[in-house]
Length: 147
Image (cartoon, rainbow, N blue to C red; front, side):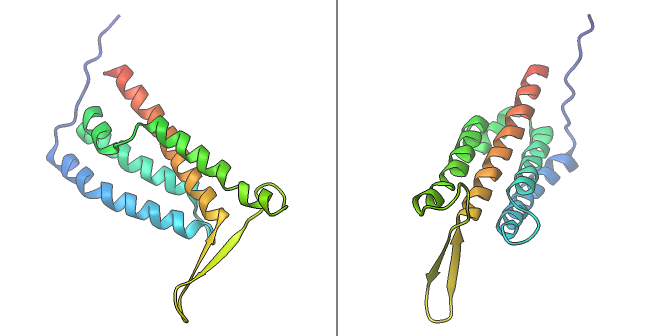
């Protein structure tokens, strides 16, 4: 049985790129998330982009650093996402509608500004966290096995 040596990247370019790209990818994932409940995009692809940001950081800086910047365990993110997705179905049931029927609330800020909130957005946020938690749980677990 041959022992494999763990190859850790020590390139300055990868370290710097990971630090620079992490916030940009997370910002882009939030853009995709907020755009998605009205247009193409949404929780799934936004969660994949966010997971990609953390995986790039993992490749450059290792498991410990990645777990430190996550602040929450990936399984907690997964559970929180599933909870939000389930909670998004409650308003429809309370209003006598079918399961997961979209509900909208318009909040008037002033005469010319209003914000539309919906259960669709809440569901998309739940999918975002569920996808992010799932991918990071898998990748971090596989990285720890190899280490």
